[in-house]
Image (cartoon, rainbow, N blue to C red; front, top):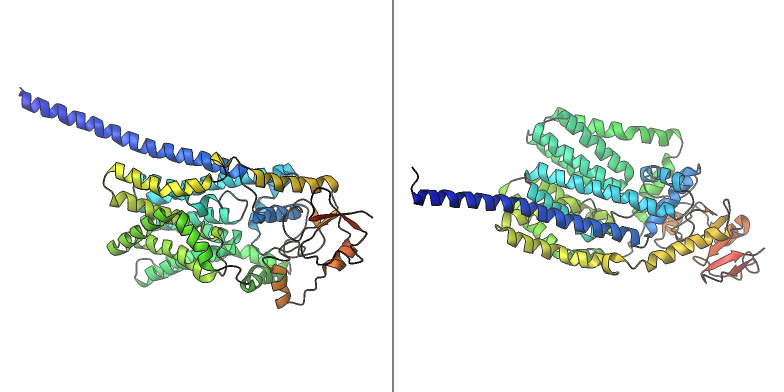
Length: 481
């Protein structure tokens, strides 16, 4: 028979157990609810934000491909082509309308969701803890370099997804010694490179980690060679195609030589300091987590990999655009999430730190009104594109000089954008004998609409009396003869 004291202790234990179960249910539910609210914010941010010039560049590139033109041969492009081929179905479905731009944004939102799913799975794979996974999701989704760039129509987004999958399957190999996972990692790494040549910042550390582990006899030489063979085999068909088609030389010039010689447009601190300031709490947490991992020896591979994804872009690239760090954000967020989980014992303190980490990035996300409802900049862009479409017909040529309104119209020259800033044309003329004269091109191609970019004299005989200033846009000129 239980004595009253023992019965009371049993009841107290039961009540404590119920409270703990309740807390264990409420805490993850709270984090998931917070993450869901962030996703809603990202959605509105995506549909209302202005279109970056890179987005219009890739939509126009895909539009040209959809009309049978060959990249590098028929028109200028200095990125790897797989993304542009991938979005041609969007062009074919929605046609030469601004609806294509919004459809492209929706596709990028899908990729963003997939990146976040892989981030969660990777956190589980590395730290075997669902709370770290949830914290990683929240921190990654509000990191400004992530949400401002992952929603844009750019190759960095699928490159990040496939790169993360390469990392996930690599660490799955380390956990299970599965050759299937090893091969999957190599294939996804190759696909990441085909989307964008900047995947070298991931290729280098993965190669280094595997070679170091071979040296330390933690990985068999045969496995490392299999990884390399699968990687090369995945790339080989594309490069055979380039060589067989006679376009390899142009591919090399545009994707590697030209990008190497493009001048530095701004200092590296100009990019890094605002990025650090806007994500200061997450960055501090990341460095706390990295130091803890390196000191303990726990998951040292992942810590080193994350450091490489930050350091290599800074070392290798002259101009540090924020999209260069999208691939680094998920590993940074995972380590920062681990730091919150391992450093702060109470859930209340974790919540306070988490809210502190996301408050400034969220304020930046909503800087154009609540849920970024102010879409004036985007409306101006759309109106200009629609205006040019309304005064031209399919087959008419235009001269843009940048990427502002020529999205669904033909161009007058191989170099259809980047003729001034960021100086792709000038750079290419320094390494080749390419000849470019805007007045000769206007005279021979007779574009229906021209902009004032790169045109110093409108009194040239090939322009004067042949173009009038648009009554809606003073920087546009409409052909009258």
